[in-house]
Length: 391
Length: 169
Figure 1 (tube, rainbow over the protein chains, first blue to last red):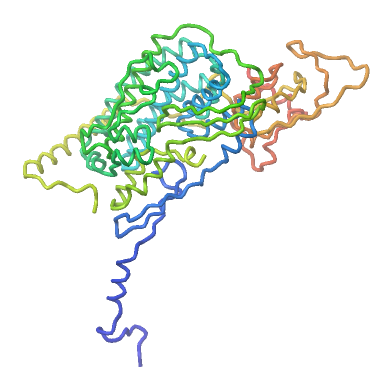
Figure 2 (figure 1 turned 120 degrees about the vertical axis):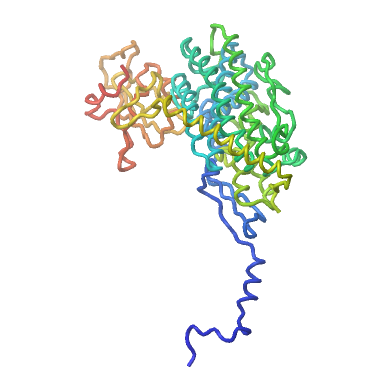
């Protein structure tokens, strides 16, 4: 009588041929939608061959909020709260870019103090955003302490913003023609103190994480974006600079009052690893923090009392035409293409060119051949915010 | 396959790597160890200790209905359309009253409801208010069990009772 466990003669078993078949199959693995390495909800479908990634396919749309269509039904001031929600970690820069687009079409002159304060808030926001990138990147790679340090420092900036604008994350602070509120002298003094504090902190973070041998081993020579790839895909910001190209809109096409300021553009120089790898991309951000502190110091020297709001009509109606405005945001070049039909309170079309979208599209390019753990490091190093990708 | 191929170097490189790994780890651990003495409390124990919010904090909206002139400017400025206002004309011979900053109240406010679940706290409605009756309060603890109870009627009879608690001094 045949037992249930009897699988026959050894030479008749088919297990060996089956395992050979299994070996040639790729395993599909879902990274996300909820994954700690992605700031937001991004699902990456990974096809793995044992622990090597064969393909990576990003699936977008989990945070899609119809922002572009929604903007067509709002007046020009009402778009600003929606623009905030694009990149919720750097909302000031988003507002600034949009507001600059409207101002260019309206022909508004912004007072000097307002422009300087915009640079101040923009650079503070850049520091806050890079601190978040630093903390969460260390968290992705398994270090929990830097995350807490970064948040403690970031909290100081958010507290300043909360006192000035009234909100911690989604400010609606930069308005068409100027700013909502003015900074008091006491707050500006605290910004000066924060600059001293931040320089010390940046040194500490570099000692703690950047030059740590284990961190370097995890990130150097991992996820290399070659410069040609970056140019082909249209990468901008720290990703492009990390690959070795010195391109910063604040320096190359100065907008606002940036031409008056003296600062360097850090690029990935291959101090460890090679240009374009995760370590260099990460290091560009840490160096940019120091440069932002330098800019803020110069703003504090230049600030003089004055008006913070230019002359803007009560109901904004833009003339017929279109404008394309781009700015250097913490994650890259953000641009708005604003089309106006003329004599309407709403924009006809508001197209957002988001830097993170291009960076996500580069992931399938670098993923093949990486280990899964290295792929996590790569996703973390491009510092994407999904609110901006999906819009 | 992997891009992170470890370079096989000499024995000296091997021990140098080992030394650097241990040294940089101890540098980092020394930084964290210093927090044993110099750490300050940065977090607060929330329900017992409450943070004093800054002056301009934008929390829940509050409308002082006695000063409202039903101009509906807030409802038009709102980007998410969460303010519902209705008003009617006063009967003939009604004595026109004035708000605290001297604006005549020509219409009788019959409904002023804000759906707080829709509100995005952008503050655009408070900036256009001509009598400054619509303000952001500092009240941030108003979670509810049902979404309907997030609609706040500022003409409700008990509004006076929580007015003192909510209105910014």
